[in-house]
Length: 426
Image (cartoon, rainbow, N blue to C red; front, side, top):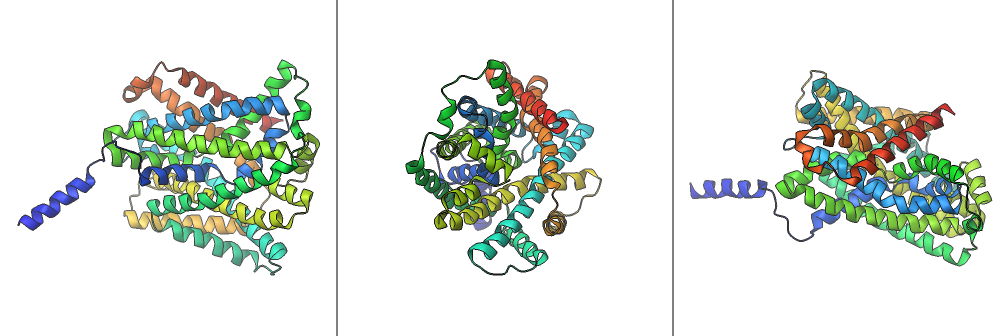
């Protein structure tokens, strides 16, 4: 009888939220998981997109990078934490705004993230196929076989559970950080001023504002990790209880400092090596900065390392976005009135993701870039505007009202959405 009571007590203690003590391995794992979701394939195009406007717009973007990303993701985390125990983002929306709003946001959430997952499926297949053919001089298998094996391999990691996904991503972050640092440091001897040639003349205020307006979405989505925020917030609440918001903010701030420092060092190292004309050439050739640098220097080390870095970047971003996409799909299935058992729901979701990602990766459609752009305004609305609206309207978030950061996040969200809509209509 005592043994049974002790067993119950042990289970109860294990389920209790952990008190807020010193930084631990669990926090580090989540910090790297957030970093891993945000810093992916988009980072390899950021030096081109951000550097084309010249030195002064890039400097302003660098100064805005941390507050833009930290305050927005902290707001979304607070929104998820404001719901009941164990509720994900789609359930919290329903809890605060009603069933219809919950269904709408769930639908938008899924269609904002799922196209990005498809893009990563295509990019992963292209990267590995090119690496086999050009670096290893091996004839790659048929595209249908290659894409199936790659996606199935990533979904095998997914089947191990959310914690394994986060741990796998955090492990993959280490070689990616080392690779980014290696490339950034490798370029230092080749710095020739590059973008500094545009620093001697101050741009017209109207031209500067226009450049920033169109460049802000690039910076926002290069650091976006909203797909994993819901799972992150749920886990923090389960682990830390009433202290979840405080510890979540600490993890987010450290993750964003790591992101901003690492990525900006890489970006500035690239734009100090290449002139604005060369950046424009890279954009015209539709190449990532790694591919352009490999061709520019004819360096076998970069030529070999570039696809490996891209593979790691795409794989970990795929895993992070899968968490958000599967969460949205499960929410859509449940809100349709069907309530399968959790294991059945997981299998249905995984099977759907495998089939669709495999078909799209095999077909390799060029329209994916447009789909990603169309998902942009939805992501901006969910990441920037929805949490700020909730702060104004939801009693559970009333304590966050009156903060200057709320105005800043709302303004950036509106700028990002308006610039993306303008880009689509141009």
